[in-house]
Amino acid sequence: MPSHPVLLPPRHYLNDGFGVKSWLLTRDHKRIALLYLAAVTVFFFIGGAFAVLIRLELATPAGDLVTDDTYNKLFTMHGVMLVFFFLIPGIPAVLGNFLVPLMIGAKDLAFPKINLASWYIFVIGGTFTMYAVVTGGLDTGWTFYTPFSTMSSTSAVVPAAIGIFITGFSSILTGLNFIVTIHRMRAPGLTWFRLPLFIWSHYAASLIMVLGTPVVAVTIVLVAADRIFSFGIFDPNRGGDPVLFQHLFWFYSHPAVYIMILPAMGVISELVAAFCRKQIFGYTFVAFASLGIAVLGFLVWGHHMFVAGQSVYAALIFSFLSFLVAIPSAVKVFNWTATMYKGSISWDTPMLYAIGFIGLFTVGGLTGLFLAAVGLDVHVTDTYFIVAHFHYIMVGGTIMAYLGGLHYWWPKISGRMYNELAAKVGAVIIFFGFNLTFFPQFILGYLGMPRRYHAYPPEFQVLNVLSSAGASILGVGYLIPMVYLAWSLRYGKIVGANPWGAVGLEWTTTSPPPTENFAEAPVVTWDAYDYPTQVEGHVV
Image 1 (cartoon, rainbow, N blue to C red):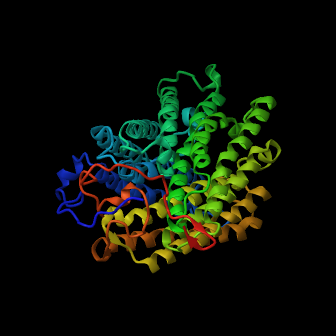
Image 2 (cartoon, rainbow, N blue to C red):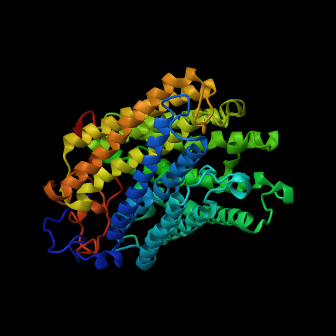
Image 3 (tube, rainbow, N blue to C red):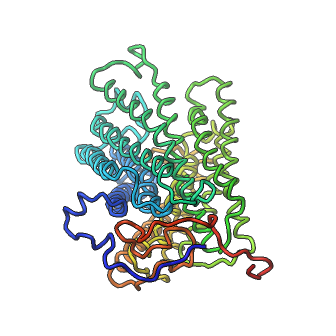
């Protein structure tokens, strides 16, 4: 097991230059992670504001708060902001940027200048998209389906498309940086099978970023070209094919789900090991499951198109592959559960988020099997069942893991501890608020309520009121961590290098880390998660 230094260096990355210029021109991966943290937090609350308006509208069946056109823009901008500017970049850009070099014993990422450039590209892309929001909004749905995006929409499709196209380069550069860093900059002795599972999951997600993002970038360019120059690529009146857009979009966008969820799974592996004081059960299987998800994720895009006109034979193949991709995800859930069995579990806030993730992700995964079955999918397509399933995976999964990881590594990031009681209250409120928001939507979808409608039959009102009430609770839950984490920056208890008693290279350096991460280059002689073995309550 690693040893822990006890002396705090006189300077660390937070006080190594206080001016705005020193931050905006920094090449330190830790500072760039905090720049990303600020940016994605802004986009999160913008997207959340649109969600508030959506749920206020749906509290009554008459559609009496906003017009149908405005409602189209609300759910579109909610999806665009949260998918492209929070869920996809959230964990890799913030936690990945901060932790990948620390976890492998490197001084920085392989390309520090490219890392900073990726943040600027992200902000520029977000600015273009925000321009679309403030100049009339976007009403095509976050998926930009044709012919809405190329012909019938009068909203700001082109600025939004340009913004998302630009942002894609940020994702590509981040993925490339992670891949090269993990391959070339590991500390001596840190072999592939000594790597933390957090690194394995980011490596797999980075492969998807590099291979998949160019596809959606080109697709969005084609939409803009179709709209501006009337090329007819997706316009059937000019010999184009609107279903082709769906194939191109989902070829990236289903793997993009794993860009969001694979890093989240890596976070959960770290939390379960640390707060159960055990090695991850079946480490090798969990590591290869990440790569399996990355590979199989590129083969299942067609299950989004069971009612789009593809052949029944293609639908059967995609159905089979969709069931197959559930296996590596199940491996992770079962192995986390086996790790917790007879573990010395500490119910600290990060572990609460980990438990919440496992429960919510399991519900999302099981309902995904319903959607992989062609007959059931036809029944619930474009209903609130889809909305609930998607949010159980993306919000219940990615955001729970993001908050769990942020709490776990917050002492390392800031050098201070947050208020534990407030953090536990926030975690519980988020969990219950989330379930009250989205579980009724499974029932609504099964009963046949279509999504993306601002008015609905009165018999659906009770479930919609429950969902809107849950959304208000969930919103309060998301605000609570923002308050006490900000409070902790000034008033939180100062902590040492390893307040959790965890293993891993990031815990062998000071909190906050020095600018170059380590006073001396580390040499790894231990396996990942080298906690003492427990046998019937006795430490061996």
